[in-house]
Image (cartoon, rainbow, N blue to C red):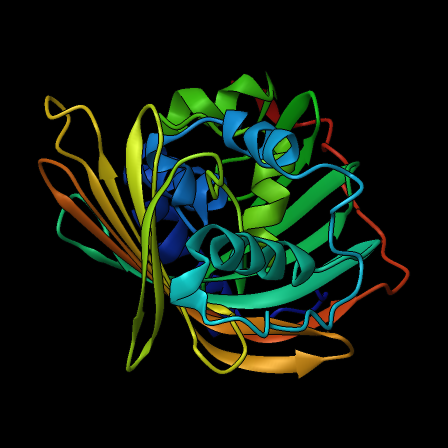
Length: 306
């Protein structure tokens, strides 16, 4: 990903013009980039990571499903709702992607809160539980940002502005106004199901297009729909329990591909609405698991700290 030498003059001019335009909107654009990075799947909009602990409390290690193949109970689901709900929760958990490294090229398209359309390519690399590395190309193949996130820090290089930022991981919450930590973020980027509050499932319903569950938490109601044939997540709708915020989020997973023993959603559509609306589309053009990765991140000496 090194910048080639001998850049054609017309490309230099494009880069110069793009740089001028970029500097005028840099703060907004950086906020949008980190906002997308922080929420990617945007399920963290109204919730905290306590839900994952509730799942572990509700499902003991003894009963945790270790095999990907989970047989559906032979009994009529309606005759044993609790058992069937347990089966569905176990199936979702057993379908979590287990990996050591993850890399992807993602085409991001969204309409921001300002009503403008944005497009960029994001190159993502993850070392599970250790590092999340992101390179953002904003236009003409020009690198705009390089981001390195660890469990306790966030580092951002702005290539066109020639600046850098060093922050704690709480910066993600501050700029995105979302309760996102490192582990939640890596799950969101990989596509693992998150924040299913299994301790309070209000109901389930079988429908023609799948199976619906509703979990009720302290801060939100989560309506989740699973595909009926393989129990992959199809749709998640979050409604804020606090009517003062009136926030809603729709998340759609589609275009699943079978990779080894798991399914991976290659297209995701996200809509978040409060006073204004944000629509995001994520198209995963390339993705790989468990390859040897590098995480190049060096700050040039002439860059200014912000």
